[in-house]
Length: 339
Image 1 (tube, rainbow, N blue to C red):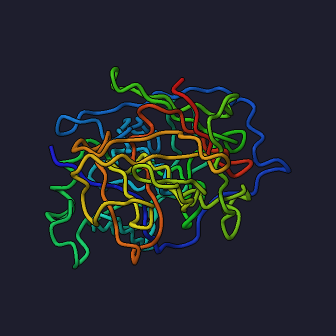
Image 2 (spheres, rainbow, N blue to C red):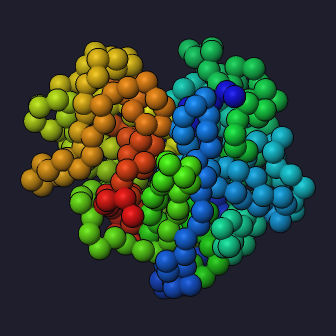
Image 3 (tube, rainbow, N blue to C red):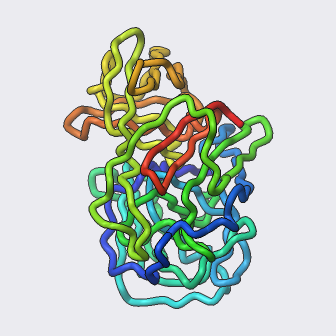
């Protein structure tokens, strides 16, 4: 089965988002406290590179969607949409991904339900009608078009839960009763499953990383954060760590580190068993590390030139052995032991 590297949204051009302003407290969602939603870890090419969630769009049949903490809003392949109640528009959308895959389509809206919760009203998402490659990446996962791409994937689209807006935004911020004030992801690779827990901050985080504020609130008034730019610290080997903007990204099957990380190997896939470590920002205690290997979703690491930006993308590997909580109310990412 083919695999696409949905490794974080580069940019989306779309019309205005939907959503009504909430009350005084946009996180008035006590009914969501401690709600646990089951996720799956499908086996793809003998590895577990992704997390998926069963989602119903407009009351239609549930379909598995890739849970992506590094992009906001939903992108659903036209061939997988099903027969739910969906309102389509002619507003064009375009999304480009790091592996070169390009999505084109239109805006649409529907009530979305998953894991026993649902959105308060129809939410705007991107209905993808064409899949292709950027010219500089002719062999990307979308090279053979929408039908082949759709057939090759283990998911029907992307369920983006990043904390910002482009302008589609996370379904978790548009639920009945209000927005989720936080969500935590923990996984169990041995059981090929994971859990998404709402409104439950950890009591014993190993590290807390602040997020910059997004340029404006979400369209429904919920605070927004640049959730791909957590201030986290990294190094290879025994080098002193340096703090760089970091995306804690379930949508990437491998860790992507800038050559700006101290001790970074040469640009490209790391093949020399180098160890990269995440540290706290205060006293530089180790939080998580991985020895570079060849398994996507576990230990694959690649180095990008500093000209591409001095940043780090954790990939999904950290979610295998640590709990990661995104705090929407306070704008921070908290890393703790596996639950």
